[in-house]
Length: 142
Image 1 (cartoon, rainbow, N blue to C red):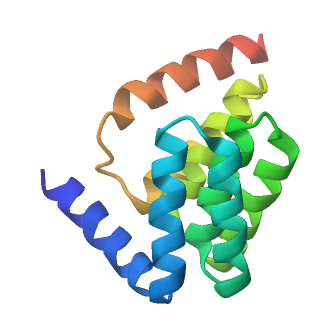
Image 2: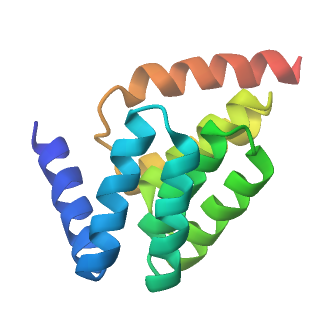
């Protein structure tokens, strides 16, 4: 879809902002994360952050590794840093929403998801996800 092409293009632009060495570390870390080796992924992302401390994607990738290792607090800090560097980073907002949802904060999860939708209104699957979050947030409010 057109929205997916836009999302891919944005990711390419973000990825171009890092050095070749950091890009290599990010790709290797992503493979380690997909291969269920979050500890090795974390090492790759730590090394990439030394090279590119101002790259929001590096912080987001490290947050994913930390979350996979069960360190939610550190993951949340990394997501906040990604959003400080790039407030319109919809992937970071979606990840924050997922973490808030897992922690039982449906209202916060809905707020973060709405912020992501404001940036990327045609996100695939967004309507169903938002409806589910809204249902839970309203249930929590009762």
